[in-house]
Image (tube, rainbow, N blue to C red; front, side, top):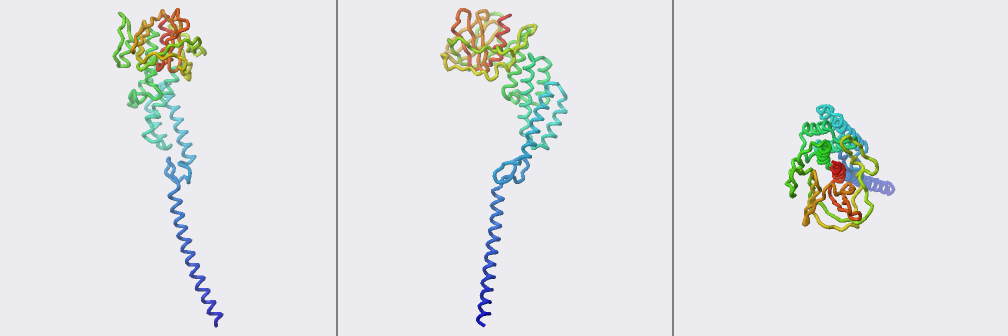
Length: 315
């Protein structure tokens, strides 16, 4: 009798223990599920769970990256070739919807494509009027402002390229029309401003050797002058460590002189220039008779300035 009573108690205890373990196991399973779902990230592209440590699915990221690059190429080619802008717009909309490209990103996409097209224009020669028309048509079709398209200084570069073309052709207008600034200089009769740079750092250098823009051979001889490709200046940053800082002011390039005005004021006639050298972010000038002294201007567009001086000194 005792044997059966003990067995009965054993069963009761065992069943109770199993029920308790089962309940705790269920609670642990539910808690773990909640924790897992809270800790898992959602893909920033498709919105589905992407795992514990990843912010996106690799496949989704590749879809967007490939679509972005394909659209950049399409925008560049359409501008360069002057192709149908309406077809381009439809393409961008359809591809964006299926490739996780948000509508807020399209303006950046257009600006980057425009920048690529401008750089391509400037590698095959002076910007032609037709190329400029292709670019301005793109701007108008997508209702973009000058500021919208100035990614990597692309729109300003296009304007400078247009001015350079007109200088080569002898048909340029006053540069103040383009930049909407008031000239601080007193020009001679019939002298016109081609371009004005503000907040320029002026240095003096007594170093002999300096990079001369275009020396790598990246230039094109023209019937009316010479053109140095923008790539021959890219990456050549002006080092002023061994130069003497003199002033900060404005540099004006005109039909007859290069001017500087800050706390000091001076001008250099083109027939006084022995040589000039350009960097991506600066310009140096050596005057005749001053072999060991260079006037150096930092924070100007070396490609643009060097091209202007290379041609204006020959006219």
